Length: 124
Image 1 (tube, helix red, strand yellow):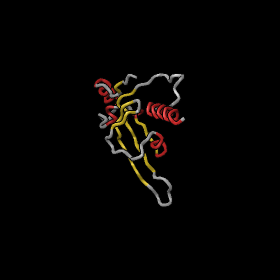
Image 2: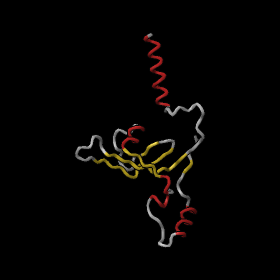
Image 3: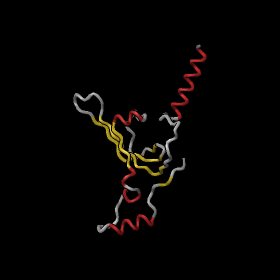
């Protein structure tokens, strides 16, 4: 899948700055559109394999390239699981239609399943 660079071009930033009466927008918002942030809560982080909270600045590939811009860990008395959150700013993004054969598994899952089947045949 081809990943497109989502960073605003110089022309896009100039046009955006002209549209703001208070002057230029600073920080990540100047380079990337607001909708490019992905926020994952504790359960979502576990689903995608984030067992530890990453430090801001850590790079991830999520069928996109992104950078952690915010991360937090907290817990309260009596709480069974920690309250974790991470926010990723997408830098490069690709999209393509879901294939009919796509079962939602990753390549890692497919390799693990194939190894399990091969092991089962060897023990049979």
